[in-house]
Amino acid sequence: MNLSFIRAVIFDLDETLIDATSGLYAAHNSVARELKKNLTKNRIEISLEKIQVKIKTIDDSMNMLLKYDRNNWWQIVIDQLAISLVLDSKFKKNLTKIYWDSYMNSVNPYEDAIPVLKYLKDKGYFLGLITDTDGTPGIKKSRIDKLTFCNIFDSIIIAGEDTEYTKPDLEPYFKMAKSLDCSLDECIFVGDKPYTDIKGALSAGMKNILIQRRKWDLDTSIKPDIIINNLKQLRTFL
Image 1: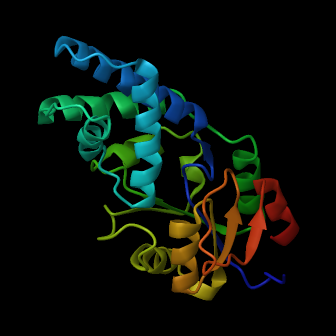
Image 2: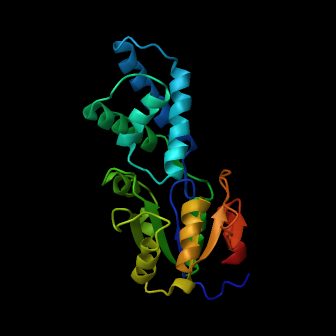
């Protein structure tokens, strides 16, 4: 595919540039242990493993439903475990804090991320980052600020905070193109989730690349322009 007209390469963050595997594992386990302690205090016995599995399932399903506010997840976990207990708001907020503290302390960029970002920068491309809110305002910005490579981006948009809606809404893509002073057809978007990243880029008129970090159910109506398994493959096209 001829991409000589591309001036800007725009990335998703989690599971595109950042390896979320260890972070999610740590977050799920930390929340599960805290929930287990709370349930034990309420004389409710359930295995830690069962809680962990349920949290992982809820995490995936809520993300696919574009429901990112973790404060609302924990009661759903309890309800789906068929436990008759109403969690108070303070405890739910504390679980969310535990989730993100554990996540942030356990994630690293993929080994292919920083070298490829530097390669693209050296080639003269504008670099952008469009990432969805984490549900609680300010958390995603805090996470981005801690990245060793955050300064490499020419523009960063937190969809759902810097814009009204999250991906796949068109606004984040339009706003990014404008901020980079590029037309939509001069931009290419790289992301791992077909139902947000690629769907939004397609609808906005951006070229797009799906990086398959893990398997998501791919809506057959969503057809990425290019599919890769490693960011190093971008050097073939850009």
